[in-house]
Image 1 (cartoon, rainbow, N blue to C red):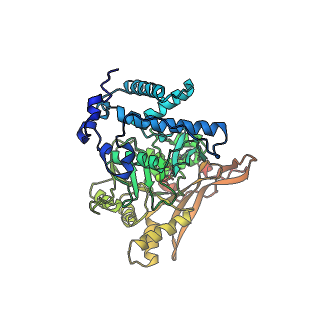
Image 2: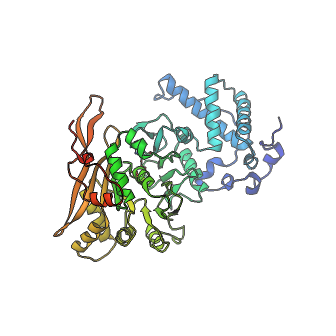
Image 3: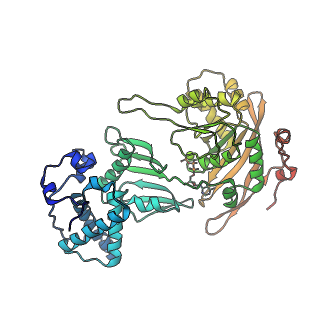
Length: 483
Ligand SMILES: Nc1ncnc2c1ncn2[C@@H]1O[C@H](COP(=O)(O)OP(=O)(O)OP(=O)(O)O)[C@@H](O)[C@H]1O
Ligand SMILES: [Mg+2]
């Protein structure tokens, strides 16, 4: 059967030139890519030996399918004219792959039931055109994070819970090939001499990989999937992440341009909260965002997004968050949002907050509001600024107005644990008052955490400011709520 997506017999007999087959990866001598090197067209499927471990029927079936899949994948790469694929529609490609697979199965004398064959066709399509075993997980909207610990362990996070999936890679080499496919698409490389990479995928997902020898037991991959529909303030209230009273308070705080820090552990919902809070920023305000990996999606009209950049292979060309921040200050911003403050940029962030860019926001990794302050102090010290502690504290005390603490709890739920205001300094101590908190009352037998949000009874330090700006919040929102 003739198809423009197949290499013809003569063409495949010719020595392979990179330009003739499209992507250069098919002729690379790189060990990561060796698997893709052309192989002799005729391959005879070897019978799959049942190993003692593969005792159960299911495992045997899986092993057999994996073997068939890997043979077929090789055949597909040998037979498909990859340079013609760029212009092909998805349905053309699927039917092409299905027909090559059907022919090959006959040739290999393998009989599959229709369900296995459909899975095989789908997996091979993903293998050739997508990210192989990761593709179904990337397409599954209920998955937030994908975490790969070597080729045989792929975890996902759904609704805040980590679960091991039955997705596996054939071997380390297969996993490396997929990693390579991802990073080369964004112009990066990962190999022994450059064993880790942080990148943003074409769809906006955040991607990090680390390979051997630094990753001891096989490559480690983490993907934070990009959500087109970001969680709004209403969504978060509906999910029970915080109360409507807290939402009202936060609206007043952001609208009246308090400087806010969202603090929390890794994956606790900091970026999500920051993004939701940004919806309270007036549409006419000029907002500049600075991130290592652009994740924020601000709704405003007047938003300028910046992304820092690591150094290239020669160690040149790095643009740090601090560089972006310094430059941003010359770009007449009304507010600056730094996705995460984790280093020397803290100096410029505090300065920006102290010098007329009220309403700026950032996130930090910390376990409580008090801990957050210590983190900021440490970051200042680590940036090499020689300043007495009292001076550092007074900088922080006057820069930051509000610390919002978020957390991912044992049951997987993400909640705002507290909203704390910074009220000033007493001697060398920064004074704070907690306005709202999550009161934990117990735990259900299934592990679900019970509790409720409550005011602490303290009225906001900024209540008058809110009022002056037209946010006359009822004092009842600060009341303590009994269980
Ligand atoms: N309240 C919530 N309810 C349900 N899902 C949430 C909630 N908050 C965040 N998420 C989801 O949890 C995941 C992690 O959130 P997010 O990226 O905001 O965390 P983070 O603290 O910024 O993580 P990191 O430390 O890796 O930067 C995202 O997929 C997000 O959609
Ligand atoms: Mg984040």
